[in-house]
Length: 409
Image (tube, rainbow, N blue to C red; front, side, top):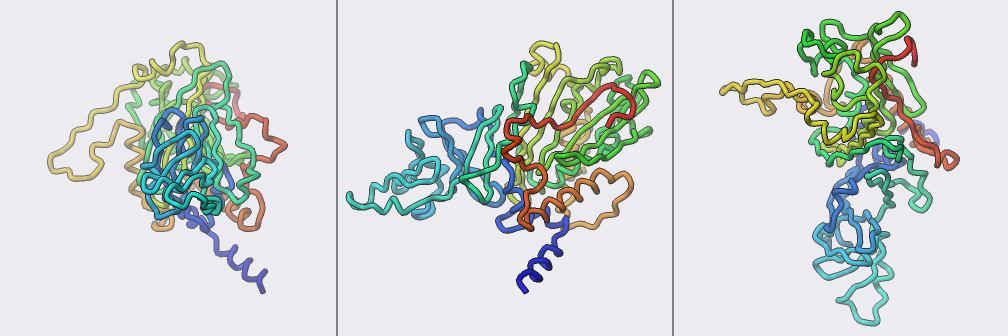
């Protein structure tokens, strides 16, 4: 009877469950099998950083010995927020009664208790393992805290002699999945992020809403990639824009928010030399954080400091005095356009949809994620979790912007 009940429970899982990430939910338990980005090295300074991850209130800190910790936000004594705690050599001290916790959640001191008290040894606070890689801070919130899977060595985060840039954390107030599936919807680039088709740039020609490029959605070892194509300068070549989603919630594209798209087509002959990787970490069902890392291996010196000057200026959109819509004006900024369209969708479990052929990338991604959630409920490792045998391998996620041989997948 127990096995029948378990099978019935599995049968109830649907893609709508992906919107709910708290403890005990199908998506929440799936997310907890991966290393998730929870902060950046440059933003973790000399004060604690309070944050919510997968519905749990936590605090991230670095003690005066340089060790990082991610522990429960509220002191187990009487619930005071450790976001206001004092950072010391051995850990973080609660401001209320001075209980001291190390990075592993062990209670080290309780000054208000009798001098001979050993009660502190019985107090173990919630904690999760954390690691740094390439300027990002990852946490593992899964079931085997003492034996987590290897942290993937994502190629944009590994030293390769190129230039690196880590953006400041961005915060969004809608469901994480709206952002992720946007990454396998290339049609929206031609429509939402459109520009003047006659301005002579590669972006306007390739992502032309009057001539939307064909795209293929392809399964990969890590998730899904979409490849948009148009005829190249020769019969054997084609212009390509390739981007990927890696499980659980990573998007990688071959350009940096259209950085190169304002250049003529000839500038794309050898590709953009960029890996632009975005890690999405849900705070809860209605908020998420976005962590972005860029790796540039081209020949242009001081590429990132010069980036602001290479971006085309945003379009000017007049704000009408009678227009009381919350996000107006929104045209002309890629990020703002995405926020308006994704943020007004509602969660996937709250809306009705009429999916079409152009949603084939979205459909494929939903299938891969649903299968991964079901794998976790069956006790298996989901796709994208590294085994120890592959711990030292560099994880290369496919992305490309430029010209290459026709028909390459």
